[in-house]
Amino acid sequence: MVHGAAVLGFHTTIAWLPNIVYDHGALGGSADRQFFLLQATGPVSSSAVPILARQLTDLSLLAVSGSLMCATGYPGLLMAPEMATAWSVLIGLGSGACLVLALTFQGRRAADASQTAALCGTAQSVGHLMAAVGPLLFGSAHDLAGEWTVPLALLVTLPLVQGLFGLGVGGTPPPSAINDCPVGTGKDSIRMNGTTCFSYLDTPTAAPLSITELMPGAYNVMEYTAVAAGEQVLILTEHSVDPVVVQALAAAAAYRNAEVHVLAVPPFSAGGWDSEGPSPMLSAIHAEADVVLSCTWWGEVHSDRLFFDEVAKRKARFLSLHQTATASALATGARFPLELYFALEAKATAQLAAADEIRVTTAAGTDVTFRDFATSGHHAPLTAGMWRPFPYGGVNFYPNRTDGLLVIEESTVTGTPAERTAIELTDNVVTAIEGETAATELRHYSPRGYYLRHALIGLNPKVRSSGGAQFEREKHAGAFYLGLDALTEEGEPDRSGPGHAHCDCQFDKPTITVDGTPFIEDGRLRLLEDPEIRELAARFGPADVLLDPNPRMVLPARYTRC
Image (cartoon, rainbow, N blue to C red; front, side, top):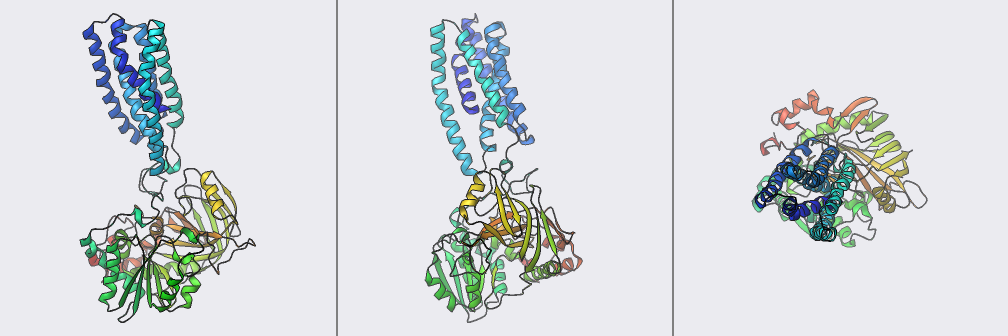
C-alpha cells in the first residue's frame, strides 16, 4: 500500500502539475519552472533517506514526515496558488522521500532473500499498475468536476493513507530482518546468516588454480583421519560438490600413497527425513573402506544405513564434511593447527566431564540448563569405527536432563524464523512449541514430538562465523548448537537409532556457564585466553593471530604446521 500510494501520487503530480499551476493564473514559463522544481528536489530527499535509514531502526517518523510534506503541498496549490514554488518544492521533497522509503520497507520487512523478492514483486507490480491508471482517473475527475478542487482533494488522501501505513511498517523490523549479516557482525544485529542455501548447488565454486589454497586444509584432513600408505580411501560426494574440493582431498590422500576412490551420490535428506535413503550400495562400499570422507550437505549419519552404530561396526574411520565441502571451509577453519585444536578439545572436555550443570543463555531469550550429561570424550586422530565432523570444531555432550526455553535463531527445519519461535524443554523432552509459521513447520516435521539428542560447544576460532552455512558456523569458537530428534511412536527418546527428524538449532553468540563459572561470554570462548593454549599456539605463529576468533583473519598456510 505504501509503495502504491507513493508511486501513484508521484506520477499523477508530474503529469498534471503544469496544468494545475497554469489554470490558477501562472504564466506558461512559471508552470514549467514549478515542474522543474518538483523534479529537481525529489533526488535531494531520495538521496538523504538511505543515509538516515542506515542510522535508524525505526523509520516511522521519516515516513510520516514525507507524507505530511505531500499532504501539505497538494491543498496549498489549491488555496494559495501564488506560492506554487514553495508547494512544488515541498511536494518534490516529500515524493522523493516516500518513493525511497517504500522500497526500503520492502527489504526491511522480509526475513530472507526469497521473501524480499516476493514482496518487491508484488508491491512494485501493484504500485506501478496503480500509477498507470492514476493520471487518467485524475484527469477524468477534473473533466467531470470542471475544476481542480475535487481531484486535488482526492489526491491529498494518498499521502494520508501512505503515512498511516508507513507508521505501521516503518517501526522496528522483526529480529530476522534487522540485518543481512550473522549474529554479532552487524550493528545491534540479532540475525544470523539465514539458511538460504539448501544444497551445494547454492554455493559458489572455486577457480581451478585455487586448489593450492585448499591443500593445507586437505593436509589436515589426512592428519585427522591418519591416512596411511596403501589404505582404501573413499571420497563420498554429492553430485553438486565443487570438483576442486574433491580434487584437493583426492590429491592429499594420493600424496600419502593411499588408494583413492570417488563415488558421487544423490543428496541426502535434511535430518534423515527420507527414511528410504541412501542406496544399499553405500553400505557395501563403506565396509571395504579404511577411511571415508563424506562430502554431504545434510548428515548422512541420520540415515539407517550410515547411522553411528553402523559406522562403529565397520573398520572405517569416517569423517563428515557437512556443508563444509567448500573451498572457503578448507581455506579457513580447516587450516587451524590440529595439535592446537586437540589441546583446546582436551581442556574443554575435561571441564565439561567434571561438571554437573551447563547453562546456555542468549540475547534473544534462550535460557536452558543441561544436567546428567556425558561427553563424547577427547580423541586424537580418528581410530577404526569412529565418526567425526570436519573442520574439527567442538566438544559434544549428551544430556539426560534438559530444562528451559529455546528461542530459535536458526534451525534445520525453519532456517531463520521471521517471527519469534520458542521451544520449552522439560526433563529433556520438548513440551511446547510457540510461534507462527516456523512453529507449524517444526510440529509438521516431527508429529510425534522431540527430545534433545545432543549438543555441541564450538572450539575452532578459524571456522567462519560470517558467511558460512549452519553446520560450518556451529564449530566456530564460542558458538553453540543442539540437535533435537523425533520421539519414538511410544513417545520415548531413543538414541540407539535415527529419528528421521533431526533438527539442529544454531546459536552464534551464546553465554555459557559450567557449574556457574563463565565458559563462553557473548560468543567469546574463554579458553582462547588460557596461558597454556597461548604458549602452544606460539609454536605455530603469533598467538594473537592463531587464536583470533575473527575468521576473516585467514591463517597463512605457514601457520598450519610447526
